[in-house]
Image (spheres, rainbow, N blue to C red):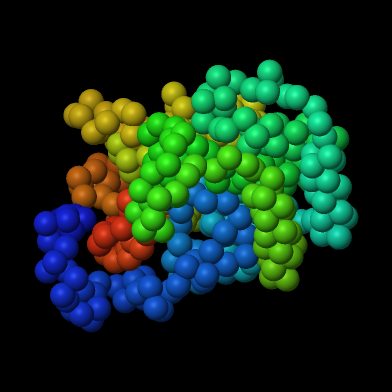
Length: 391
């Protein structure tokens, strides 16, 4: 089975000189897009841009597979729901959707994206809470964790904590929406460089040469402006999705895909599981866990970056993924489609599929046009189109 690996930096000059047509030769063109064909505004349409998220599914990719293998009324399952992309796109196609994730923040974000709201009432509640936080003079720094005091300037942290206090009086689901706004603002207000919001390693407290703006910049020292900006943007995005959202039910489960008991029998799976040793999904949103007091289950993450890619970690990844898909198979009929988007450069998935009782129909390769920051560069990933074997 052919392996397709990321093109490394030493090849960047050769790659840069190739035409888009040459770069895409031999790929599934329906699954690969250039920046011009699929700009960021399209990739982050409506609620897909509600909060930054590393490793996010491209919604247009999900659309392709939902349209190819499912119909309205089907139930689609994503055992690694992440930011909820599969659930959002399934709902827009009148499909029931159920998602599972070990990360409490991921589940919160997916629920906020897929819940139906009385938008006028929601917007009023959010604006009232924001105004209460703005007017507050309470000194709440004593309630901050050591991590928060390290990563935020005093004024920024005070504003985040006052907002957190103000939203406690909100009813569900407005409280969940406000918590996502708070998390997004906290991400932007950290003491870090403008060009390293994805992977900051340590707080930055003084001036620095900014690679993004090509000048000397200073770390952020306030959060209120982000709270205002993201309140407006969140309501706008929820209203946009409200125009295409359907009555189809959505269920988000904060659980381990290896043992979760699904509430419904499902017609198939569309998912993008974690890659071994690449991202720590809890640490990615550490600010949210610190501010919101979410349950931290990082010890149960599959393929966490902290575990590395040594042999024992990769073996553990294969075992965990096998259990997750085998558990999902209990709720799937024979022949059900299972679409898995993953960079299988280590060729691990033949063993995973075999152990889970799934048969591979097609192994497709798509080009991922990485665009910004430390994730820029050429990259390829696989799409494994499978079906459930006869029992």
